[in-house]
Structures are given as C-alpha cells and as structure tokens.
Length: 411
Image 1 (cartoon, rainbow, N blue to C red):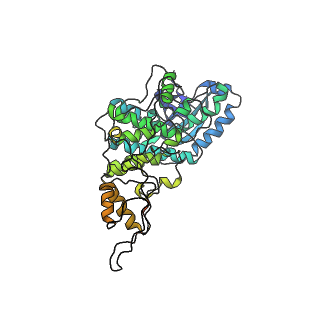
Image 2: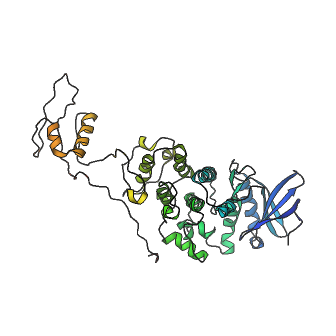
Image 3: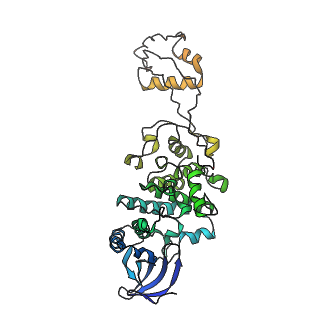
C-alpha cells in the first residue's frame, strides 16, 4: 500500500521497487520541488546500532558533491523504515534504454565517461559503490547520465554483519573478488561492474548469465570473458581487447580507474588509429609480472611517449590490424656509436639479414667474434661503429603471451 506521506513529503506515486528498497515520487512542500524517496527494509532497524550507523553513513553520502552523482537531500525514518530523499530524475534509467535496444559505441562512450568520472571521484572520498548496474544509472530531462544509490550500498554494507548478508550487490554485475566475499575490496570492483554495464549497453545482453543468482556469481569467477565481437560483429574490433581488460579476473589486469576506460573509448570518437590503441592494450597482455597502474599512467600523454616494453597481441584474436611499422626488440644487440647506428643495424637485420649487414659494414667478416670496425672519413655523416655484439635470438621470434584457460569446475 502506497503511503500518502513520508515525513514532510507528499507521496505522488510509486516509481519502482527492488530487493533493497521501494522508490516513490514525492513533492517537497517546503522546497516546492519533486523528489525521489527510497525506503529501505524494516529489518535494518532490528539492529540496535543501525540508527547511529545510518545517520553517519547518510551524512557521508550526502556530502558527495559531484556533477554526475545524484544528490541526496535528506534522510529519516518512517514507520520504522529508514528512507533517503534524492533528486528526482525524470529521464528514466539505463535499464529502460537497454530494454528498448542496444546503444551505439558513441552513446555508450558518453555514459561511461560520466559514470567513470563519478566513481573515480567517490573512490577519492573512500567510498565504493558496490552495486553499479543499469538500474542505478539515471537520466535527467535532457538525457544526461547520473549515478545513484551510493547511499544504499554504503548503508547496506554497514548492516551486513547484523543481517548475515555475506555478499552485497547484484550477482549479474559483481566482480570476481566481490562474488568471493572478499572483505578488502577497492575501487577496481566498480570498474569491473562498469565493464559489465558497457558489455550490456553494446549488445543488449549480459556477459554472464545463469538460472540463479548464485550461478551468475560463480560464472564471474570461473568463466572466461566472452568475445563481444561474436555477440555483436558490427562493433569496431578494438572493443574486443577493451572488454577483456575491463572484465579481467584479476584487479591488477583491469583498467585501474574509470577515466582509463573512458579514455580508451574516447579514442574511437576522435578517430585515432587503431594501431595506437592496439599497442596500448597489448602492453598489458605481455607475459610479465603485473604492475599496478600508477597515477602517471592516467595522464593525457599518448602511449607511444611512455616508457614501457613493446608488445604484440594475437591479431587474429583481437581482430585489430597490426601496426604498419612494428618495433622489434632484440636482446643482446648493442651498437656503440650513436642512435643512428642502432636504428640502421636493427632495420637491416630485420629486413635483409646477415648478408646486408656484411655489406653495410663494408666487407667486414661475418664470423664470430665480430671485430672492431674502422672509423669512416671525417667528412661523412656515417656514425662510427666500434663493436657489434652477435644477435643471440633468431630474427622473427615472437613474444610469449599469457593465455588463460579456465573450465567450469573452478579448480
């Protein structure tokens, strides 16, 4: 039964309900504006310490002041049920839009940019959303996206010990570590959930589906990331590696911030060459120990300007054309005498082999050890080469990449 009034607020109608709350459209007679009131379950008040925690957490959430977060106006208790008063968003939810049709990459990119910015801000305030999903992405009358329900996630977290809830959130959008009940979650769990939302926006379906909530949670833990290009072949090929990184099982292998994910998608709008993005994404796939992304990696500096090991991806798998001029690194090859000499030696070694090198060094003997080379005339631009160390790895040797093979047993 819909109440006629909650506190000072005059209830207009019910907007919707879910497992955690019922939402009403109401009018604030004092401020003369429409608001949304989210009423939480009564069982929260069974905990004698709940009211103290509820007040504290509501104040913390209300202090979140960001352009892309739905603001909290008020909180209280009605008929032994706690409630939170928020800005009313008349444009509906992202769930409504996805039910109608999948979104274009441009539309999805704009939403990811705004929601990613919102969660990054919340993380700097020490708050993790824990329940990021399309139902919590709301739109105003102009179609701008906002993130809501930080309050619900945080307040539910504070009451989990009393109610016996071990895992909070919606299983279809949970990160593997959240589904496992990890108590030491960080902001990267929200990045994973945002990746699930992105997959759903672009395809109209979830990456992991099951008949039960528990089955969905287990799928996030055990099942490999599905190929989004197989679900929607019309997408640009670069979305394959973008989704694989956003939904990586290990937090260290994901985008570390919402901005990083948004930046990867923004390159599609500005028409950046796919080879550059291919290089950035493949760098994370090389078989090296995982290194947490530093603050410097989130800067606007292009990937090619950063110091990092070159890598290649499986082009057939990612569906991305190889760069026009790939760089090949050969351990054991050092050319003393200047940068120009090094570039010339590598280029010749990769294209024409040892015979071309012999011609370049002016009939020097190719047998090992390699002797010192004579100095060129002073009036030429040819750099002086004093020693050439033999190549220890055959030209054409490819880097080794990690391939995860997971089965349904979870072993």
